[in-house]
Amino acid sequence: MGSLAQIVTAFEGPMLQYSEGLLKDVTDAQFARLPQGADGTINTNHAAFVYGHLSLYPEMLMEMIGIDGVGDVKNPEDLKALFLHGNPCQDDPEGTIYPSKEIITSHYFKAYKAVYAVIAEQTDAFLAAPLDAESDFAKKFPSKGAFSAFMLGAHPFLHIGQVSAWRRCMGLGSIF
Image (cartoon, rainbow, N blue to C red):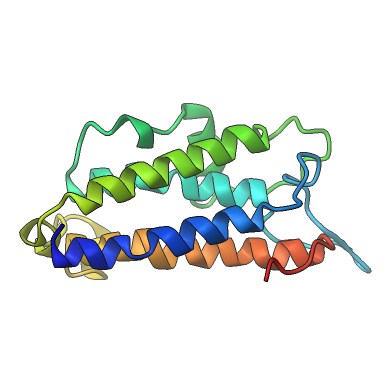
């Protein structure tokens, strides 16, 4: 494993452990619910939306850095339709909008484990190479490695932090 791959994949353990810990005590019935506050519904992302949204990005990352053929990151079409960037998070009291906790989280964990494994195999030269100049991300990230670090570190931690706040709103408390 190259030095850059070690840096990018260092996020794997903490991110997946935190992601798993945040699911502790979350029931199937709570998973896609918006919390209720004193003044009504709290407009935040619930766990189903966060894990579903994040589960889309391993495939996108692989495409953006030019790696093909990794089956475990392939997104089911129904998840893409629900969780693409810009789609609203909806309260789902009847369980008819979002797939089950098991479907969403199993894809999430499978996709992230697969993408981390593939990144671990990449050379420093590959990860130091620039992103496609046509990409909007190329303006923000100077290399495939920098983009990978963002997509496998900062982006997931940003969103799973939302689940931490959502847990408190749902009365579940901190996992620490």
